[in-house]
Each structure stands twice: as C-alpha cells, then as structure tokens.
Length: 433
Ligand SMILES: [Zn+2]
Picture 1: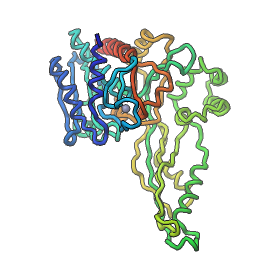
Picture 2: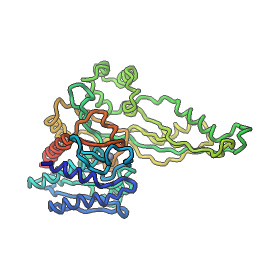
Picture 3: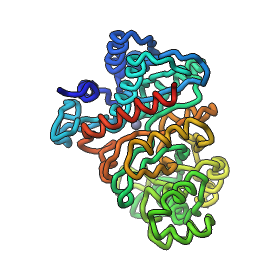
Picture 4: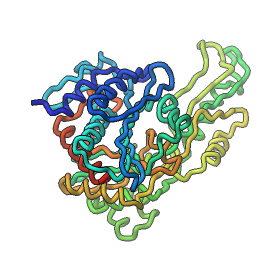
C-alpha cells in the first residue's frame, strides 16, 4: 500500500504552479479539499485572480504563542524538454517521487500537512495555535504572497515560531555524521542598476567617451576589489560545530578568533567554494549588460545590473557608497532596484531546544549547525517583525542533490518523505503539547 504522504505528494506535484503565472489557486483548492474532509477550519486570501494563499488553523489553549508551518505552493520553471520525466507527472520511479517542487518545496508542504492532520487525528489538546500556511508567489519575491499577506492581514500572521524552507540534512558533508542545517538567517539582496550615457559616433573613429567602454572599465574597477571576509555570529557557530569534523579548522577550534577562521578558510582553499565564500562575504555578481545595436556605431548608452548580497548587519547605504566610489565615474548613475537587509533569528528559546532534541532522536550521529542562507525566502517577512523563523527540512540527501533545486530532474526519495514526515509530526507534537 502506498503511504498517504507519498500519494498526496504525487498528486500535488501534478498541479502545475510554475511562477509566473503561478496559478496557485489550483493548489489551494487541493489543500482546501483535504481540510474540508478533515474538518479543519481554513481560509483563503486572493491577492490577484488565481494568486491564492491558504491558512488552516488548529486552535490551542493559547498558553504559548502560535506556530506557523509555512510553505510556498509555486515552483520555478521546469522545461519538459530538459527533464527525463514529465516535471508535472508526479511519477514514482525507483523509490523516488519525481517532479518540479519535490524538494522546493512541495515535499516540505506535504510533511507540514501530514503534521497538522496528525494533530487533528490524535485529538490532543494543543497548548498553542498550530497554523498551516501555504502561500503563493515565493519564487518571484512574495509580493502576491507572503508580502501581500503581511501588509494586508498582519493580525492573521502573528506567531512566535515559523518553520519554513531553508536548512536541510546532508549525508556526505562530513564522514559518518548527518549534518542537519538549521537556517536561522539570510543575506539581504541589494540589486543595483547602473547606467551611463555618452555621445554616439562612428565606430571607425573611436572617442574617449564611449558609454559602453566607460561602463566596462568602471565595472572592472568594482569587480577587482577583494571584499573582506566578515564572520557573522551564525557563521561562527556553523564553523564551530563543524570544527569537530574538519581538521583544517583546528587552529580556529583552539583559539576561536575570527581572524584565525578567516585565515584558515583562505589557506585551505575553502573560499574558492562559492557557497562558503557567500557565507563570509558580501558578494557582487554582474549578471546583466545592455549596450549597443550595431558593430560600427558607438553606443550612446550602457547599462549593467549588479546582484549584490549583503551579510546581516551590513549598512546598505554605506555599501552603495562604496560601489559609487569604486566605479570612480561620476557620470554613471545608480538606481536601487531592490534592497532589503539581511535578517537573523536567534536560538535563545525553548522551541530551538525541542528542535535540537527531535533531530538527536531521529538521526544518526547528528550535527545541527546554524546556517546563513545566501538566498532569500519568505522567512524575512516574519523576521522583520521580530518573529523567530527557522528553515528546517528533515531529509538527508547527498550534497549533489542540491543542484536539483531550481535545476533538472527534481525528486525526493520515498524514504526521505516518510521519515521527514515522521520527524515533522514528532516535532510538532512536542512543540504544541
Ligand atoms: Zn523555495
């Protein structure tokens, strides 16, 4: 017999919620039908036609503040031509449930669903409200999902703990141990558009005010700057946990100094690993250039877009000033396309200890380092309001599987779904009773 979680995920993966256009109303109806049947009260929120989020609640005694199990229903584009199987087929093959969203994050959504259904089924009295929240539009920034909900219905989303995507477990990050990352913070995006103008002209007679040439020279000045390594508290904690396993960290394990950590990361070559580098530095990625239209015409305009990610605690304004200075070209204009600060939740609470205990109970030789995400999730909308939000995904996969997220042939093993569901149910039970 196919376990219920597997059946539900397989059906859920068949619902195409590629964003844009999202069309999350189909997924919200899917959840609504389940909550109807189980007699769990829910309501929906529509930010735009078809862009629906859903909140289901089991009411507790209110002794503790509410917990929100947060998941997004939308997924990023999957090109069927590049997928071995239909990305919206929900097929079960070789012990895996396959399809876009299996990891990011319909799989987690199903674990959270099973947890609220289990609490309803056990008819235990809860000491706090337990909320299942499936939202639209995470993948393009949340303006029709979590951001919309927070701006328009702030009273409905008060909580003391949010469990969301972000962290996850790895089988092969260190030998003989399961590393279960708990995401407690995120870097902040600072997206800049740079533009410069200059006189046009004929390509046969170059002049010194070519807008494109000036832009590339200025960009080269910015990109040549070696940004300093900055050790934030989450990252310090991350390497402290891993120092028992990674011998190159020995000098840092001994003296605990940030400058020692920075030195050993550099010496060991770890800063060459993009994921590690992004954890300890502000980063600048040049991702877009626009200029010119003909080989023999000097363009009168050039534009570049920089995807900058700042560590928590950084001053966005000061960083933009640094960019301005490094460009060293006063005629290049800077427009801020998006800026939101890095954000962090602390672990100074009982709920964190419960998560730690549950991980210790369920996984072999677990290590649970805190993790700073370089990307963004909907957790930021809660952290902005001082609500603790953790990224927790109790599956254990090889590090290589990370490439499936937003990549090809996304899938989750049946074992991981079943085990992760059991962990989620146990965790929610302990958090709420
Ligand atoms: Zn996601």
